[in-house]
Length: 367
Image 1 (tube, one colour):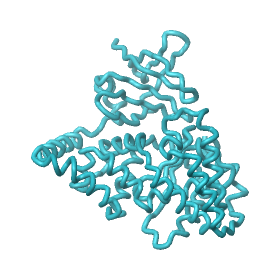
Image 2 (image 1 turned 45 degrees about the vertical axis):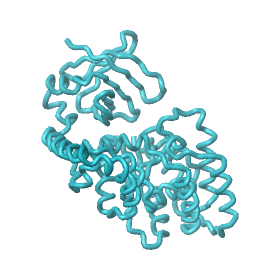
Image 3 (image 1 turned 90 degrees about the horizontal axis):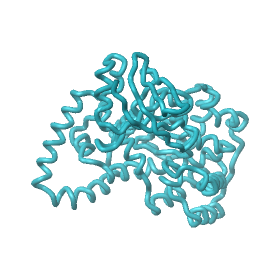
């Protein structure tokens, strides 16, 4: 019986446990040679992403706690499929789409061999300048492709009653944006990470760890207002284009994303390294606070959230935390306080207040 070496993370602690993984008719057997012994049923396993051929497969188990297995061997997925083709079909990428991608990629690379100056010098400038002219429909399509590969459907918290409460905060902000071309959508991921992402096209991903940090709809609105500015000012599109691989350029030239996991997985990888420069962050802060005032939320709530992030940063894993992708400084908080003193705010009591303690724990209440 073939044994595969891997790393197990329980989702509650940062401890990485070396384990041996084998296959049986029920799923993956995971053991550490000591007290750890479990079986992961095939239908509960989700392949979240594999960044590069040299990096490990990342498998998640569809439970409330995000257990993770990292398998380094590039032969693992193929062997797993050969062992149980029917039960593991959902883990495989589409071979036909992958072949099409390779053909298109080869063609593009062949072209770039004869145009290195354009590719390495002019293209980055063109991408950064062109971001503001990208059609909203194109942004929406790419944003959806990222969501498809970001997490398993079971990882999103979907309690309809409580999502209505959260969505109403987003709607208050959206309705306060003049000539808004975007239809914003909120996705809550059941994970203790304290972070949020703005995707091109209007999708905002918020992790339950951040949502649970909020003490009021105003504080949640402060986070959303900041993320909204990254979308409406094309920061998300600009940064993702800036980091884009050649494969992404193929998709933009052909206009084809579909459900091809190749592009969504690359989009997920970009989220991990996505960060905005100081100028873009300050713009999102400034315009986000103005949006809070327009929607009649407390502008100081945004400051409170930044102070919470700053205070708790030493206690959290730095990977994918809010401050790792949205670098904050005392200067930014200082600037926000100065701006707040210049604005005339008239916050009101919002309908979400009475249900907020329940809504912010939506993932716990959905389990």
